[in-house]
Structures are given as structure tokens and as C-alpha cells.
Length: 182
Image 1 (cartoon, helix red, strand yellow):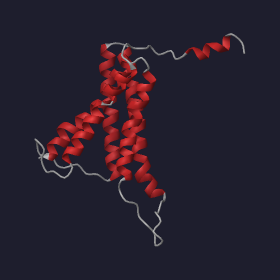
Image 2 (tube, one colour):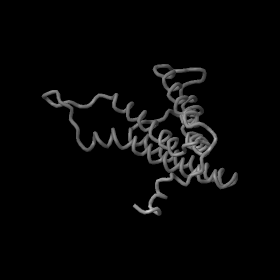
Image 3 (tube, one colour):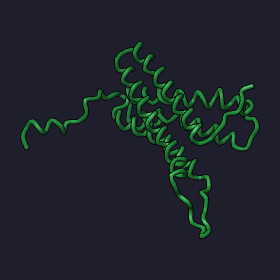
Image 4 (cartoon, rainbow, N blue to C red):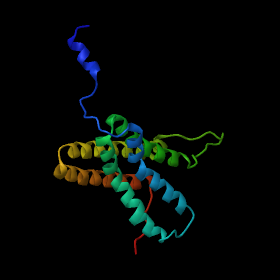
């Protein structure tokens, strides 16, 4: 091994922030925690403080859209930015996968679960879409934030658009319909 090849072992070229990694991960996961808490509070109720349809549109929707911006802020300020990116990307995908796996599977005459391409598409594709969209959105927003305020705002708006498009795709893949606002 030559001296030149040891340069690879020195670490990443990303700037390290001042926040401890654990605090950054918790900050990045705040929108997910709030989303799950509100979702669990709504379970089986027609109204929380607002009617359910308004909570979905004015609370849960913005929480989904703001998640990549919060993740990017946490990533830019984290001591270990890659760890924050991984947690902010994979945790929502795992949460969605867990929710989708709670739905019962079809059974054949012997009582064994029927797993075909349709089942795999319904159970595995939505979490994959969430993970890829969040990864791209957080990476884009954090790259913009590292280059200044104007580019940070522009990149954050693009990240919100990416996550919004992914949310629409997940709704279509899972067959979920949103309630009418009015």
C-alpha cells in the first residue's frame, strides 16, 4: 500500500457541523414524529380540534412537505451529515412499510400467503418511492443551503416539489383517496 492510497481513509469531504449527530437526527425526524402522532390521534375520530379533512390538508400535508427542508437543515449542521441523511431518508420509508405490512395478505386454500408481483408492488414500491424522493430532496436542499441563502431557498422549494410529487405517487400506488377540502 502506498502513501497516496491512504488518503482515501481520511474521511469524507463534507463539512462537519456543530450539532451532535444524535440531536441532528432527532431534529430531522421531528416532522415524522409529529405526523405519526397526529395520525394516531386521528385514528377512528371524525374530528380532533379541526375536522379530519382539515387536519389532513392543513397539518399532515405541510408536515410531509417540510420534512426534506428540516432534514437538510439538520444535515448541514450535523457533525456526521451522512448519518443524518440516512436516518432522515430510511425512517419514513420504514414507517410506511410497517404500516403497509399491517394490512392482511390474501391466503390460498392451504392458508399460505399469496405473494405475487401485484402484492410486491403494493407493499414494496411505495416505501421505495418515499426513500428515493427523500434522499434526492434532502441532498438537493442541503447542497443549496451550503451555497447560500438564495440557493438554499430555491433548492428547498425544489425539494418540497419533489416530495409533493412523491406523495401523490404514493397515494396513487396505495389507492388512497384524500377527503374533499370543502
